[in-house]
Length: 117
Length: 110
Image (cartoon, rainbow over all chains, first blue to last red; front, side, top):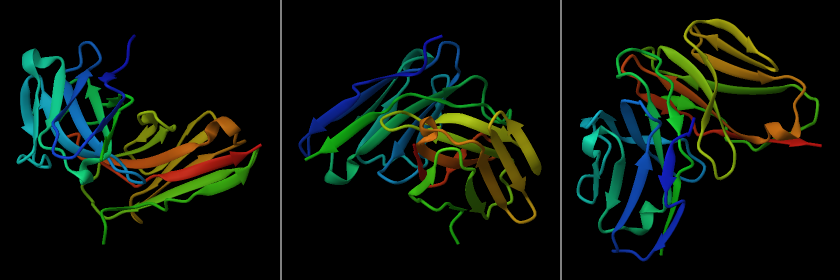
């Protein structure tokens, strides 16, 4: 079974440029997560989707970040414009079953490493 | 007080030694207690998962939870160079939101 797929794996851009990340979750997984992982830190949740609905976006900086999950499968995360402080790894994860069921294992992709110059 | 405290290391031990990794937490609402392993340039992968106080064993790995002290541990027996990675403690609420520790970098020396 294929795992969570993310692309690109690496991205280098100049500040103020836009950037987009793509995630394909494990087939059949209803819930999709985007996390931000800074160097030397654990992942922090940015947004959670249940099917195509964003059910928790409280940690997403909405002035420059946006996300979508059309048709409840693939998802894209966009930053516009990027700032120097956005340099980090952006992880996508997916799980089977909706939140609230308790203990749904999240499977992580390899992440996209963003460098903003 | 931070919600989760984890020593970032690095921790270096010789091959074959017993490794002890620990985290403390402050949120009594946490219901699930987990350990993730993250290799360099990879995403985290779930290693151990439990929801009750006590010990849970899986091969060379033992997860220990003490809810009264708000303290969790991961023990690795007969450590191998392939165990070299960052180990993240993680806690989940009833709504499946995970709070991660900073991670401890572990090096097993051949």
